[in-house]
Length: 314
Ligand code: G3H
Ligand code: 13P
Ligand code: ZN
Image 1 (cartoon, rainbow, N blue to C red):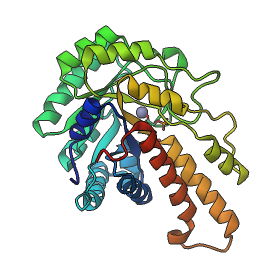
Image 2 (cartoon, rainbow, N blue to C red):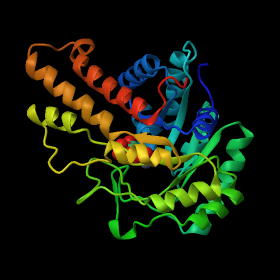
Image 3 (cartoon, protein in one colour):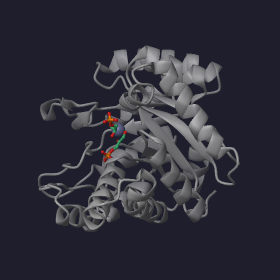
């Protein structure tokens, strides 16, 4: 099965009504955990890297970063029985998007959601043309998410939800493969001040009109047990709140197929690291002190695969 086009993973999910976690990585350790979880659950997995992750991994050199991620992911994926793909998350920089396509990413996201609709449409159409010619599938975003992207706060007042009619026109004109409609989520660990709520009517209309795989950004749940464990070992995650599991499950029912998850992995990993180091103060071997991080992060991913319905869908 191995390294596949993200389109292959998401078209099956769309047809069979389940969601697949798209999991952000910055380093080798998170890749190991995702591979382990996907194999254990017999689930497809989409691995994604932000522009920041590419710069980090390549020590500032974009080509080195994209080449390295493709090599790392392929090296593991090619010998597996579960389908794995590699996706660029929130591509905003043309050079980075091109580097991903040239290095062999399975798919790229062109995120021109900060621009007016017509500009978002023309930028997305241009990337679709280039990427599709190389067999790379494309995700775009309509509407604006509230939160933090690459350390820049997207102003809450600018946050606006997707217009379903625009979504239909956008998909028809750009030929984009997957669409991320803004329906009320935000990135990071502090998603809702009051009650968690998404605009499902809007989501249902977008699905009905476009029929393509849809993406939920900012989909971390901030599991209470992970938050409390990390806090019991010194973390300060006061006020952290994610998308509750039942809302996530409902969003899949109404057409979400790609479920973007970064914050939950980061919290589980750092919570495990805090616990391990506190309990083993003399340990300094990295092959040992990530043990609890691996266990907790793998569990978070496996729970998500079960919840979204991607387990046993490889
Ligand atoms: O959408 C944002 C992702 O969580 C990536 O975040 O820019 O800190 O790598 P990052
Ligand atoms: P979270 O911050 O909720 O994990 O969202 C991640 C994301 O949307 C990556 O694109
Ligand atoms: Zn996102």
